[in-house]
Structure formats: structure tokens, C-alpha cells
Amino acid sequence: MIDLHSHTNESDGSCSPEELIAEAVRTGVGRLGITDHDTFAGYDQALQAAARSGVELICGIELSTRLHDHSVHLLGYFSETAGLEAFRGWVLDLQASRRERNVRLAGRLRELGFDITVEEAEARGRGMTGRPHFAQIMLEKGYVSNLRQAFDEYLDESAKGYVYRREPSFAEGVQQIREAGGIASLAHPIRVAGDVAGMMPELCAAGLSAIEAYHSDHGAEETEYYEGLAKQYGMLVTGGSDFHGAMKPEVRLGTGYNGNLHVPEDVLVGMREYWGVERETLNAESRRSGEKKRALS
Ligand code: AMP
Ligand code: ZN
Ligand code: FE
Ligand code: FE
Image 1 (cartoon, helix red, strand yellow):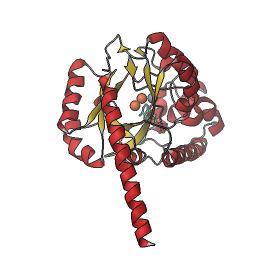
Image 2 (cartoon, protein in one colour):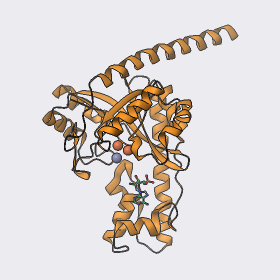
Image 3 (tube, rainbow, N blue to C red):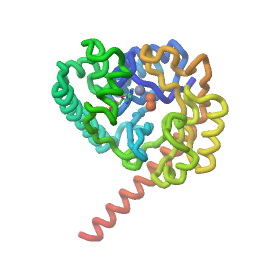
Image 4 (cartoon, rainbow, N blue to C red):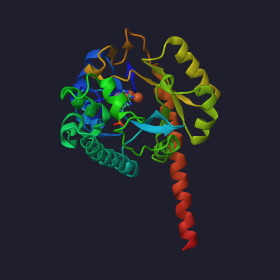
């Protein structure tokens, strides 16, 4: 079995990278993509365990980007981890801006009279600390009676405790992934606000290379629909469960909700072809720019 969308506790999953590999072995997922939010830390730590257990690991990431004032998740898949230095640097900058936002958010909540520190939030969320962790603390300290209230009154974009966080635009995310030789795939399109079909020309122009047609949130009709869109625009399809472990226990690795997910093996065939062609193109470009530099000097 193949599953190209999963999370470890380096973002918002509950399994450590080693536990996720054990889960892949247990459920019969032989090819696994780890796509933590805005970090490669889970993938990096899973490499050894994967090699020991014979699970083929695919290097991935899930970026939060902005498109028309909405948050859109974008998956990036890479054939090899060599050559990702610049992209990894860009991802570290994203983490730094999240950390800096969290410091300001804690300050804002204190201004509003709550006893909350950024350290408390980070003890829960580590590298992926965000508003949900602040909401949990507010609930535990009795400042709100449920998480919903924490967001509605304080943390939502329209609420009084909100502080701005820089998120890359969708186009910037796509461009960064592609410059690193990766495949940029639109994650769980069913969750995208607005009409995806209508947005396709724009997404295509931004350089999107794939659509996640297979996802636990998609029924058979939706999968077929998004596959059709991908085909129409000459894009690849990708797929995975979006496994989060105990954070979302109904979703199983490899098979989704009650076995509703089945990612065909040949999804990876298309991805491998793409990586091969892309590598040639990037090499040719760097050869050309090298020649240009030599010609100018
Ligand atoms: P952050 O990345 O820290 O800005 O937090 C974003 C996360 O907060 C999202 O992934 C959601 O899980 C959660 N979130 C954002 N807005 C709301 C809302 N209005 N109600 C509930 N959860 C929300
Ligand atoms: Zn997640
Ligand atoms: Fe997502
Ligand atoms: Fe995800």
C-alpha cells in the first residue's frame, strides 16, 4: 500500500517519527510520504527507522499558504534530499516568523488580562506551536468554556486578540517547491474555499503540478472529479490519508475513514517521471546560466 500524506508529532500528529514507521509496517503501507506542516523534522528523524523496516520514505512537506485571503494547504514532494538546502532555509524562515508571531500573541493575550506565556504554549506545540495551543491553555485556565469561544472571541482573524502572521502566498509556495525540484500538489482540494475548477487556470499559471485527488475526505465522486481536473490541466495526481494518529483517530494510515481511501501505486510512477524530467531541466538551466556567467566574464 501507498500513502503520501501523513503527520508526525513534529507537527500536529500524535506519533513520533519512529511510531509512524511502526504504524506503516503494522498497516502494510510500504511507501510512505511524511508531510508535516512547515517542517522536515519528522521526515529526517524517520529515515533510520524506515531503512531498518524496509519502508520506502517519500520526502514531503505541507505548507500553509494564502490564496485570495484564505488558507490553502500545499504539498511538496521531493525525490532526493540533496539540493534542498535553499528550500530548507526558506522553511526555517517560516518557522522563525511563526515563533515571532507567538511571542506577540502571548503579549497580546496578557494585555487582555490572561496569564499566558509563549513557553507554556511551546511546551505543547513545540516547532508547530500555534493558536490551537493557546486556545487549549485558555480553556484549561478557565478563561473560556470551550475552544470555539477561544477562537471566536480572541484568536480568530476577526477577534480582538488576533495578531498577524506572515504566510507565504500560494504562488510563492509553489515557486519555492519547484525551484527545489519538487512536485507542488494542491492538498485536499475539497477543503479549498471557493470553486477549484474556476481557480484552475490561476493555479496552473502559478506552476501547480499536481492535485491530491485521493484523500480521506474525498468520496469516490470527488476523487474522480479532481482526477478529471488534473487530467484537463495536464497535472499529476497524488494521494494520502492525512493521518494524524490519535489527534484524528478515525483516519487510518493507508486506508482513511473505514477503508474509503485507496491510492493507486501508479501515482508514484507519474511522480518519478516528473522528478526525472525536472532534474534534467534544472540541470540544463544551471548549465546555461553557468555558460552565461562564463561568457560575461
Ligand atoms: P496558526 O497556524 O497558529 O495561525 O493556527 C491555525 C490553526 O488554528 C488552524 O490550522 C486551525 O486548526 C485553527 N483555527 C484557525 N481559525 C480557527 C477558528 N476560527 N476556529 C477554530 N480553529 C481555528
Ligand atoms: Zn495537520
Ligand atoms: Fe492540510
Ligand atoms: Fe495534512
